[in-house]
Image 1 (cartoon, rainbow, N blue to C red):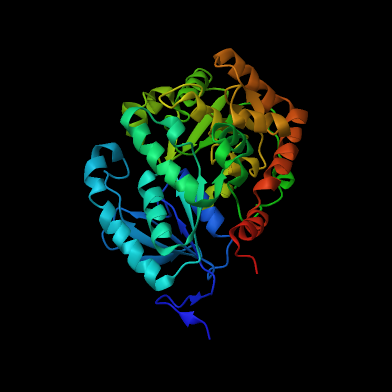
Image 2 (image 1 turned 60 degrees about the horizontal axis):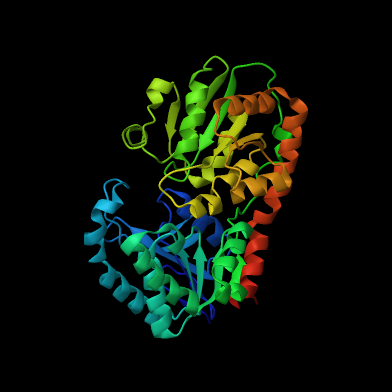
Length: 403
């Protein structure tokens, strides 16, 4: 007879803990990645642990996945984390103590911990080390390679411990894997790709094709906007604002409209760009029916290091590949995202940071029906490698959890 927990979920002999900073219903790329991966496990195989701004949120199911919430987040409505950095550190020992108590009760057989948050990465390492639990790390972004000064010194200490004790070090793209193997040759044999995933194919993209032959063309831009893409996004939106009779743009994002204006200098009202707010992960696919072209932006420059811009692989890429609509991608020539797009020819790619190049790309992706059709077919092929059931089946073997 299987043991039942408080939420009436049978506890198997092999349970994976997936520890991730951002988890649903929080918004953002890491939350999306975590949930899509977790959904492809059976509910009794995995428990996801993550952060919350609420003191006593406890444990609950979200879209079929069991989540444990811990009070670790200090910010103002999801913004301004850097101003609460020192007070947040005071929560660290409490968080670790709670993890220890839970680990003693649940006895997970393995821990998969994801970065981008050192708070969770280091806590996961402590728990795995103390209880001698097999540790697997999953880097959505580079860590040491995107730090400077004292922050880099701290990052080197934490990353070295995590790298050393990880049975496998997962990264989210083949490009990032190649970079890590060159940068950290002593760990090359245990670096592997764990791509972002999706769990269900939407309706066949070919059945959605209804090419509009004349303007105005409706364009959609989704995702979070920050240093990873804001410079390219701004250039694209400024161009589109000059062609309002031809292109109508809607943005669906968790990034507040005032933040875009005050922090990033994007006045959407002045640009006549529609800010539609945040859409839940499970509702994203339905959005694309109403649009002619999807937009994908990747930063050329900004506050991140050069290698970070090379290795970023935007989470929004996957739903765009599945959208059944042609994609216009604005991405620098030396990035792994550009390499991926070139490999599959799955988006109309603009690698020059100029408005003229962008305008020419827009003309191709809106006026050339043959090109649009080919891009949609190629995107469907490119999406195969992200199919969740296949990814998780291979992941279970690597984690030693396959039955």
